[in-house]
Amino acid sequence: MQYEHEYDPMTESIKTTKELTLLVLDVLKKHSDINNTLTQSGIQKLIIEHHGKKYGVKAIRDSLNHLVALGFDVYWKNEGKRNAADGDYETVRYDWYYVHEFDPTELHFLIDGLFFSKYIPKNQCKHIIEKLVNQSSKYFKHGHKMPDSRPNANHRLLNAIGAVNEAIERRLQISFQFNAYDVKDKKLKPVPDRNGSLIRTVSPYRIAIKNERFYMICAFDKGDYFYHFRLDYMDNLKVLGEEREKGKKTVNAVHARKVSEILGVGRELDLENYLKARVYMHGGKPVQVKFRAYTSANPYIVGHIIDWLGEDVEFTDVSEESVTVSINTNPKACILINIP
Image (cartoon, rainbow, N blue to C red; front, side, top):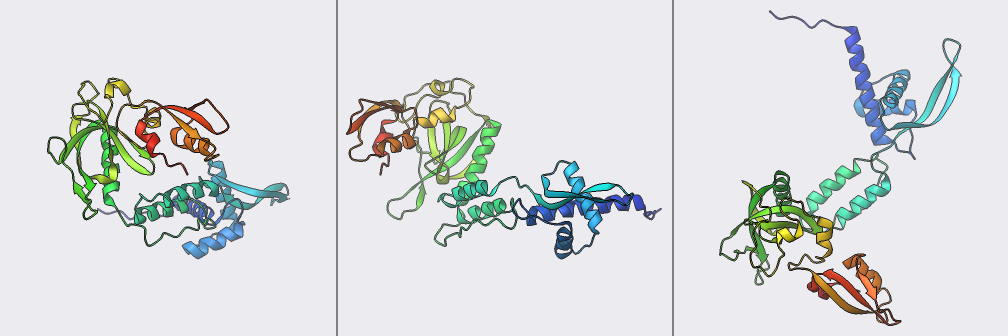
């Protein structure tokens, strides 16, 4: 037996109120900010224009006050008093606006970081920027146009980030094929490991971004040393069922440092301190490096050194022409530092 739905005016009224409240919130998010406010009649016109529905100004006012009571970031700039129907006075709020999660300065900062990062593919960068722009009102303009010369989707990097993050979160090992550029045709080609295998199995610990490049910091399947692999050079990634190793075995290696020396059995990687000693993500054990920097040749060289090596750098033997620099880092980093 089928039963017809019985019309309930109370239920329909609640549905209408909810719908209107959501429409008011949508209009405020898209069409207002602290510098561009809306009147209640202005909200009414925008709901008609964009949603094809008409509600009374009083109902819109009730929805605005309801959003405020619920704790949404809905505010007003001005208010006043007017005579109410019962002969008393009531407070009337004017010039409504929505406070977005990101202010314009924060959005510009995030969008600039994406736009000027050449390792994020064009279509992915554009997609993320569009999402960020939608976090503000229609009045926000970022002013960037994606150049045609920017490379399009590099699914290698995106797939690697997803797979490696999954393996790290689940504390599992991962296998992959690593590539390197061929000097003849300038294309990525598979590179075998030291045993001749094209498939490597590692225990990933962290993803690091250094000099705008994405790296996976990992130990090999025996948990011996930490190594770094560029994510955009990795293919055929598979998250395995085996738990990652915890740095319990010591072997001879030239280009890395023992896992147990860095984090100890079972501990997490201290990424900040780890990267301080690896400006260019070179392998090898950090050592105390000392060199002479000549301020007579570049008066701003101290600032450049701090930018690249960090504030842990120590300056001694200061003279008018030069200064001695000491830092615990990889010696290759000091050779390759790009000091203008």
